[in-house]
Image 1 (cartoon, helix red, strand yellow):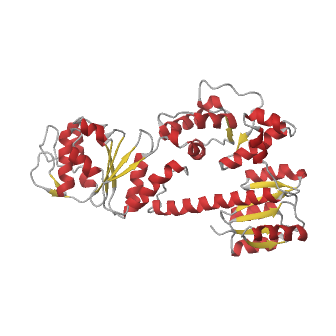
Image 2 (cartoon, helix red, strand yellow):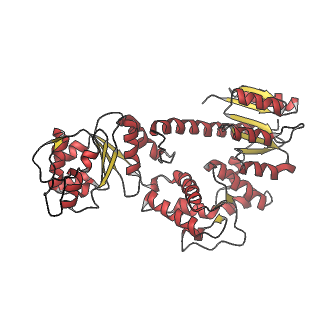
Image 3 (cartoon, helix red, strand yellow):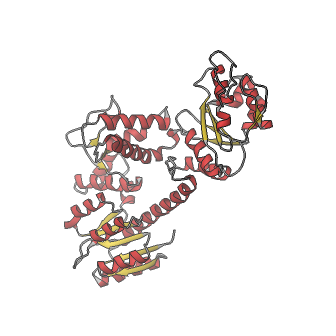
Length: 448
């Protein structure tokens, strides 16, 4: 991401001071002393970060800059500089999509750190855009959500392996998103056929065989006409076999032959049928242990295990719980026409600290239930967990949607300091952190 910033301030001396600071930090700096000039510049060459005074003389102020960014559908991160008397206005601007606000007098280290974080967010947005561009085909949107380190390796493997013809085995606990990854493989594969999913654990062996291979007329009682199976439906596309570890040894042998020879016979038939498909299999079993126990064919395992993508459980992706929660809350608010404003801080803490044995699927269903049944504008712990302590009359700090973990952390510290009248030691006790942590978080340089 280019280190570019547009700084807007009607005070010339202050504007030049900020310009020098960011030039020394290696930024390509554009400046404007009038809101109208700034809008012309951001239209011509939108910068990743915009640092603007909130109150400016004339017809265009910082809020107008923010509205213009949103109206043009730009991702540029807008940081507002404001006097203490206009903090409430700045908070409203945050709700309208501003990245952050800084109160005057501006501190050098504070403003540099805030801009750096905004630039990091823009970098992440760009990386996600590039990834999603590759994961989207014909308007289909990927639902692989998360930026945690634990998720990066499987995502990288997906991108590297998908364009090949190799069979892919996706392993992970139930609810970790194995089918989403399989669909991602299909979208990146370039195959023109359909994505066909079959859950091997959901059907008895006899029905699964007919479902996969199809059958001829008269093959069994009730087979009044020929039926094509799911394998043929995936011709020139991708066949996704979920929970392949539950497939019987007999069907494993038939599947292996299809993979080796590229042909099969329908149930009750003798004529070979040619087929071309990409196989992605998934399981929550330890297939190596199943091979040792003779529950899974070794030759099929080796055939499947060309490339293995191991998905982490949600307990190893705690950094993603906030992103997933925001996504599911928005999704189910839209579906159920519920105008919720946010999630109470305590509720978000409980969601992040929960074990989630059912992984992302369990989190999604928990949030759906909370949204549907909630009678308040702000989701509380009791909306998610029956055993949660009831909310006190003061619901505490509310977490707006769309903020990064770092931003939320800073606002919680700031709010706690406000409630403790600036007593950092008391604030540290309230938050359950060391005093030096607060000092480090609030470390600021001299005034500009």
